[in-house]
Amino acid sequence: MSKMLQIEIYRYDPEKDAEPYMQAFEVPLEKMGMKLLDVLNYIKWHLDGTLTYRRSCGEGVCGSDGMNINGVNGLACITAIEGLKQPIKVRPLPSMEVIRDLVVDTTHFFDQYRQIKPWLQSKQPTPEHERLQTPDERAELDGSYECIMCGCCTTSCPSWWWNGDRFMGPAVLLQADRWIKDSRDEATGERLDQLEDAFKLYRCHQIMNCMEACPKGLNPTAAINHIKRTLLNRKS
Amino acid sequence: MATKHAPLSPRLSIYRWLPGMIASIAHRGSGIVLVLSVPCYLWILHGMTGSPQDFDATVAMLHSPLGRLSLWVASLALIYHFCNGIRFLCLDAGWGESRMMMRSSAWLVMAIAMLFGVALGVVLW
Image (cartoon, rainbow over all chains, first blue to last red; front, side):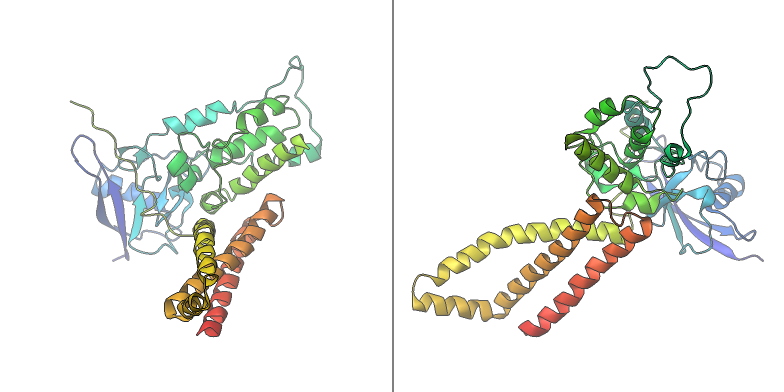
């Protein structure tokens, strides 16, 4: 008989449950290198078909299966079971309205993303070929273009928990910095004007949960500091 | 069916306390202690200036266990807030912004404050 894994999962069905609760499961350790998503799939396919969660690519690219794993946010598909303290406690991304089980309402998160206009803005006529960058200009975008908008960082941030209605949160600010740094973008001034605000940007208190949570190894705290310095440079 | 208000997923009660979060929240906490200690120490200073008897009574109060404890707490808050304040200034200036440095500098300032706290405790008792 294979070794059994102990796991506790946050459950909430709005049609049946008055309150959310934690449900314990035992799952056989089927193979080496098993990921948390494999465990959730095992439960859904063999133990309880009502368990609800988002997943798509299964390899840390789509950003669907962000969740709170033993107290820290991460992607289930790339989190190895090995090294996780048991019982593994799995909860939805923090400070979000729960639709069902591990599925949360991301409307506000993506609305904040839309507010920073995450696309290239240029007054130049559309060129016939691609807009060119030097290798150095392109290298400026390393560390921010990799973001997959999974929401692990934003929902790990206590400043966003308390002031999420106005503070943009680390994911959105990392993306804002990505466009501010882009040599092809011509709306840098407008982007900075929009963020120069006590709440939108300056609620960041360098707690660094975002950096610890990022499953892609990025550093939103550093990106936020870069925006602050860019604002300061513009003034002086 | 009437729609219920969706529950908010748990946050502070379940999130693991990582070094950066402890360092940041300790910075807020020590800042509050320092602000509150200013009127306290002004009041103590005021108490010393009335008469020689008042001076002796205030000195005795400061030498009591409670007096020493307040001195220890305020000094610890001062040294922590000072060290972590420099760490925040460095980060603002763009120094030590790598993931590894952010983590280890949080540990470093907490270790300095802890060593200072132990040393001061030995001196005061």
